[in-house]
Image 1: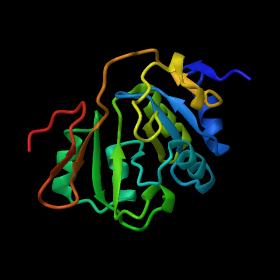
Image 2: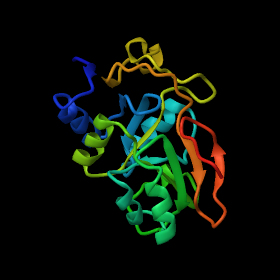
Image 3: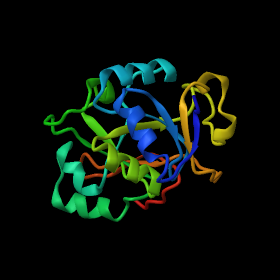
Length: 196
């Protein structure tokens, strides 16, 4: 079976089919390539956790900033600030509204949900066509360097299906910002610039 595809409109249905079957995939994003799974599917998430070597929490990729309210408590002023950052290289943390279908394995016991809306055509088309949030976490084992070049995926990930846009931009990952209180906190400095 072929397991390496260019990330484009022609391979999109293949990626969606794999996610619907509870499989993991690897795909390019606007930061570093990611290991992806259905954020609502416990079986898929167990595979991801076993492969990564750590439990959640994991951030989710959603269709648009306007979808955040399905999963988190969101004030209008906060939404305006987030719309200035997303789509882009940011992960935004907000309090879970506890009225969603996210797996407990995605949340990992956290009261916060991390949100990504990448500035990346294939990823956005993928989550829109899949019609459900996905986890896309860095492509590495916990504690190891992230894999950037998908043509040279390590032995550990060789059986997964890969969707590659062939861009090899250096990346520190997304900048993580905690918007769950009035005082916005920088959790991790990544590719996105944000002045507190």
